[in-house]
Image (cartoon, rainbow, N blue to C red; front, side, top):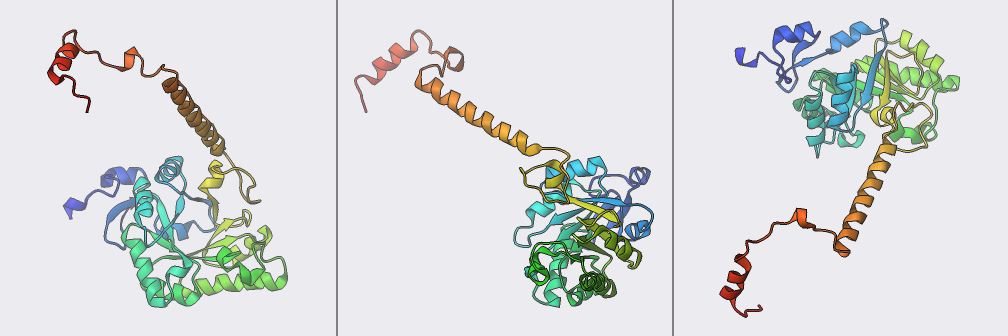
Amino acid sequence: MASHATGDGGIPPRDAAERGLKRVMTLGGAYGTRNYTVRDLRDQKGKRVLVETLPFSPEEAAAAEEAGVDTMKVRFDPGQPDLAAAIRQAAPNTFMAFSVPLVAAASETEAVRLGYQAMAIGADAIMCQWSPSFVAAAADAGIPIQGHAGLVPRKSTWTGGLRAVGKTLDEAMWVYQEIKALENAGAYAVEVEVIPAELLVEISKRTKLLTSSIGAGSGGDIQFLFAEDILGNNPPPYPRHSKQYRHLYKMKEEMQAERVAGFQEFVADVREGRFPGPEHIITASDNLIGAFVEAVGNDRG
């Protein structure tokens, strides 16, 4: 056991405790340190609002961890797991739920297998859009599950397209029943997307699940926003529920303009004889070229 005294980030147990980190072993069998466990997250319900984001790169994940983001979601592609693994490594001390593709599991057995595959590379939980029966199978297998309710984009044909859900009594009851079904199936949390803010306040009071709000107001237990929205990675238009704290897309545009300008100047220098200049070349000694020409004679290839 002594050889496993440090976590994924190489933090000794005493230092981890001083930083408020918990020593854990993942379902995949790796030792590590985390800011929260599922139990810790559950204990936060009703006490304070946690902050969650979904980074798209290791750099974003590392920045989010350094900034103090509580939890993260990470998109997990079972066919190309390297990016999720790299994001896990970039933020080794933050609780992460890997978001698995809806269509990657077509049975309860496949749902468990997909969950295990994600957990094996460091996920602390699984975020999914599965039916309660799939959630129950994975939860029974020991996999912490976060479900999805309200506007579920990939299932939006059932709710009339990409629009707010829960604005009528029938829809509000349906959202509530969906969340209770996930609770009964053994989930620990649910992402609630684009429902009336006041409705989420009331639903959060009536479920044991941690409610992660995106576009559903401040009544959830967790406030969730994509990293690309927080950082302004893309130009407008933006989702109504998002806020841009930076506008990195402008920096990207400026960088691209600088790339074009650099290439243009290089092309012009070459064509007009300014590159390479004396400072970019080495010169032969006085006798080298004469001796070389004499040695090769009139050979022209």
